[in-house]
Image 1 (cartoon, one colour):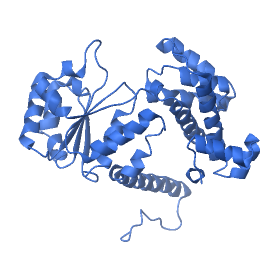
Image 2 (cartoon, one colour):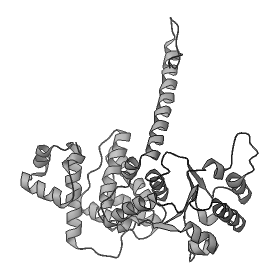
Image 3 (cartoon, helix red, strand yellow):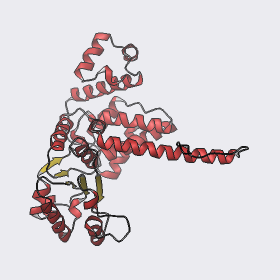
Length: 349
């Protein structure tokens, strides 16, 4: 026990007790490993940047913005539609900057009443051992989700806190905007002096519908993850379904795509349904499922072709010979297409 054993059993031992003890030890170990992985991830910009999947110009610009703004010292305002991954971008900004490894604190301004939020942010705290979040995050990053929900008095207190820090700021604030009221912008919701302090640096996340073939890449990765989780095969995507995925408006963005991918895997496990039927259901729930904007046929063909090669490379773990056999492609043609779509064998090994 002194050198790290979880527990012990004396002979003769009860099998049920041993099973229960093994389960508890496994859960404790898993939590320890998960916590270590989370700490590494929050301090490792390379790891978290890999979660920003996509090769579209919009995602390339976003990654460049994160690397540039992560090294800067000003506060950041993150805007964008719901489900675009704003909190993930906040994690990335922290992980690639000089505050990586220091405290990363997140609070939703819409989850508390005005009095509760004021106490949680600025104190005084009644419960023993707890400290206000502005103190907890000192020297690191404080993320304010739903910043547009801050009342005018709390906006004034936040502005005072920012001004008292001076330049450079000891604690960096990343403000996240969610769910604008109809006809109102974040500039309307925040007092001007606070807005301009928080928006010294600004990132606007691209909606999923503007990311082109990233939609197919994300769907494929998500379907693979869910198929492993549920112990079944990932669904095959037809050319028609690929076109429908690319054309859908995705009002819920990546979060909505995650839901569709999971439901597609569950349908496939039952041996019924299709991706097209899921998109039709989305159409009934969230309005028109297809955009009115047409795209050149070549874009759909290229996106589908890239998805097929990417899927095959993943299945065969980078084995060129197996991919050539599966797709009936000569070596030179496969190499040319991989170069065209930016696919590298080393990524699949």
